[in-house]
Length: 367
Image (cartoon, rainbow, N blue to C red; front, side, top):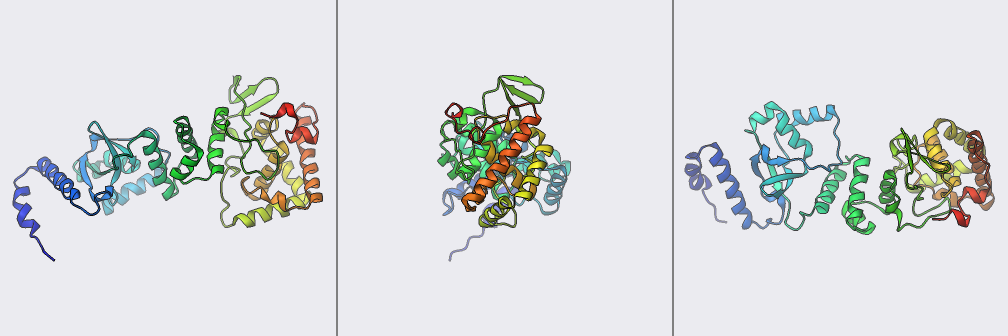
């Protein structure tokens, strides 16, 4: 194998340059080397240092780091240095962040770090052909999800944007590492009916797609949004079921089969089931208003899934346990759920409904 004395070739040349010229020269040498590298298609093959004022944050990052973690990140960079570059795309001389939003912040906001790196930041530039806004959004989410960090509400905004740019659910699922249920739940959070146009409305407890239970908004009254004549909605951040884990896609420490079996056992124990529904109707005031005033959805199904979640923390996605019940057990569970739906309706000055009404099966109630 041939060896080259790089120091002899470059050392004297670089030492004659001032700091800014030296950085430019080293960056250019890296770019030239990448052209001949077997790894030229890998962005990490060419890490360059650019002035921090040329690096700008994007406006769609769904990652959020709390102040203690930010302080820890600063200490990590102070103690260990930058061990990961900031992933960017280059537009008109500006490096827009795709991943590394907080590494970018530390490099600019920490005086000690900024001084040490001479107000420069280490970046890699994503491949050509991945520079469309939708590709960059997808790349940001993939980086964040790989680390397990993202804000759900910001994720939902990105899914909305991708759908508005005519990305199919299948394309979103492939590029963002999601399943169809997660995409639908993220769309649900926004309350935008237009995003459910391609979804069938299910009437059973065991469903492949979550119910589309949103109606265009007509009147806003503070936190509460009213739909004429009888509907009440709350924005997602007011739903008690949301922080309780109703829309999560897993239950830590349990497999899908275990969650479904727990649902079966839960529903077959009517006293336990009823006690949990009592909790739902008393503790989840906003959620009950939002869901139980929706005549178009399966309110029986929601009540059962909500009771399971409030009692066990198991998300609604694991609703297949209903189908593990016998027909008689299914009937008893349905009747118990209807009883508590009606208790809530009557207690809130609304008319009692039938099982058919509660499951949204009348023709007039279908979308």
